Length: 390
Image (tube, rainbow, N blue to C red; front, side, top):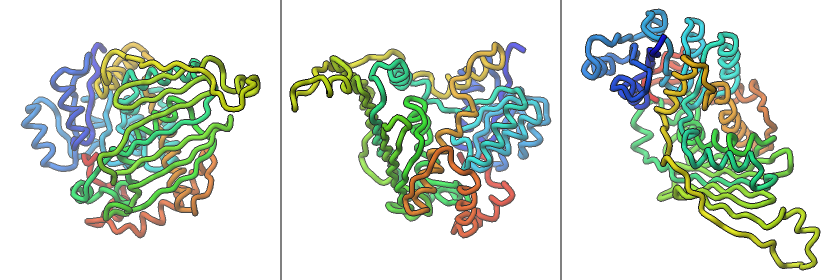
């Protein structure tokens, strides 16, 4: 094999982008093998864009057994990701799933186990891991340049959405159709980067407001407090109801501080470790000396989605290490689930890893009472949702 044939399941928003970029040759050593969507209108669009030679399927299982693909990209509603991925593994196909990995960790664990047993390449489209700014932050934190972690604060409140956005699809912003709000749809990349850069906390307390700024069922304003096993703390703030919003990531350690805002990294380096200075200084008020510099990175925002697709191709053809292994999708989802569960249960502290069964029990209650449009609650029960709505 010298080229990987990608099949795209779900050619709505994200799926269309994947299919089009592969078809026009943007992804090295990859070709578009087939597309799938359970809406004929989407397949008609694919026929116009790609011609008769690219097979089109209404049922994804027909695509999986067609022999037209080596790997699939799953760009469907969130609840469908684990089941479709497991079916793909069973068919002997490599998998790249869109974020999030799923809606609840119980299903994602089953998917991860199936992936491991299959021995096939499994990745998740965490394209922000290709951004040189985040790569640099992770490198500096992991190399100990800011010392031991003290605090991480991410204010990511520029995910603004109007009521029109939420009204644009029957599945959006419902427990039955989408399974969550800003944490599930807009912020999965940020939750992933948070733990990718500084590691997973040991517990979280969530303050999620449901339908605070919009007429929706799910969370649209969130503050998460996190605690790490070394005593460090974290705060993650996000919303779709604030305009113009802020995107500022600050990571503080015993030897300095990193701030990413507006595409600029500022590095403040202390002259010595603050913990040592604290107990050696004979001054009650004088701060340790420091210097601040801007760190410039090359490559803009990185190769993004195409970088992930090419990485998967290289993993299949050459055994390359994955940038975003699919099994790591459970980490950000765990933070999401824990924050929501904490909010449902009176803002109690939730230890990680989360109790999968406990979260699913609480979510299932809300699915059953979901006031979803067009009876999405019933449709979700048999996973017959619209393929291309991601």
